[in-house]
Length: 140
Image 1: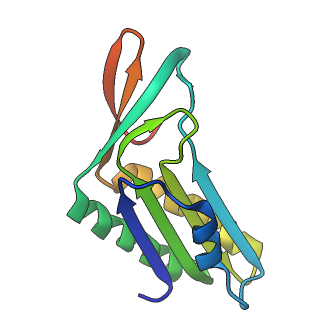
Image 2: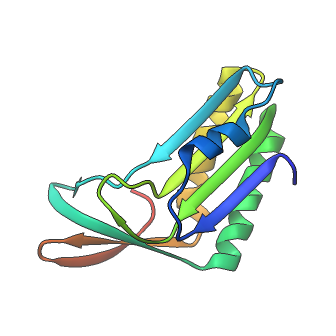
């Protein structure tokens, strides 16, 4: 679909190219969520994260979420990019971008996309701590 862009990749995500793609003359508001790897979880130091995905289903679910956002809000474009593989502190595992004529729709749709992605898309992360690794779902 020309108004949806989905990417699941082991390559570094390009924030500027996401913003460039989401912009349009019709859009008065663009909301971008950039998830980064933080250095601690629940008071424990995190050294790195490993992301794995069931790719065919993950892409299908991300497309479904983007279509739902387009149906629920008056938005023009929806972008969902997610990384797989090993990421270090400060790296970007996820970018969500939504454009709309007005900011409220962009904000609401963007929050819906990231929240739903974390609940339904088969992407898992392993947190590496000083005392071992723990697999967790890619949501809090």
